Image (cartoon, rainbow, N blue to C red; front, side):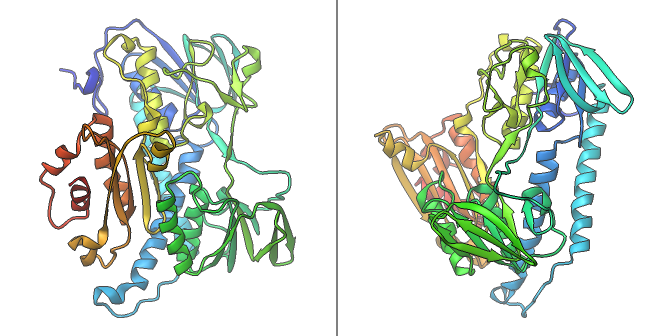
Length: 472
């Protein structure tokens, strides 16, 4: 008997009895998108070949996302212990052990990579270590240590990810002038870190190194951190940064980084100069597409990203793109779902009831302190569109659990349709926001109403009760 899941998909590790025609799929890039596509397509009976040059699991995932969150967790533990007096404990002053931290990160990365490799191998996926490129409409070349290997495939998927963007004025040396990938962790703990870029990645590094005890300056090119987020959410984070002694250079755009011995100077367009022991560049990423051979088959791209339709197909229908390379939301969760949808489409499952990916309903989180998470329609966007909405907000200070945790910071905000009560979006600022937003994300995706939330019996005492109070 075959284990079945939604839409007839098998559960993890099960084989799926799918009556499709034999199909071959070549995947260049073994990140979250490539892994999901390989796993699901193989379960559906496809012959899958995956080419990965760096690390199975994805460089962006295992070299960026996972180590950064692991370091943030370490910093969070330090912050919690530093506040232990509020929990009725004696004063504790923890210190960072860089060697142990490096070992911790390496152990997590190795375990995740091993688990992913074993899963793919158990599904019969052919795995090649090397660099992949397109040689023809149905031909892929893998450049490996043993030489070139040519793969013929009915379908091709491109998921080669991205890398940190480095402008001409930033002379990265990996010692004092860093990209994000040089900082997991850096060679030495910065005495004073200047972070350039106040988006999601930038603010996470501010929080991380401030927790480790570094002095931190943040270059904010606009008038608020997190320029694409709800201003109320951004204000809550700014308030926390200022209370912790972070220096904010608002309205300052960096134009040069100069090293002078053990000091680094960051020059800004308004004439200000931020000086520290280290500088960290966090101003976005660029796609890894230049060596894929896209010109050989004339795939449509925009700024290096592959243009895709709602099935993740490129301008050549049997060639797909996913993950960061697709130019959509650069989230591992989105990449994973894209990979799954590609596998379904390749195997003909689009003939079944099939929901396209709605990127507007993807939940996202920022692992600062307090955590920030949101999903769906934003309040500012609704007002800009002239859309009628109902906004309700409840602070965590009313929560017994928040008081028990000695951390009443933040709030839950829900946005709903005033006529129907359907939940359109929401934000959570506070402890465990990344976990709590799942309830709101489910409500947005399933078009649940505030009444559905109110009628649910949540556990007491928990932080999730504030979601119910916001729905009321």
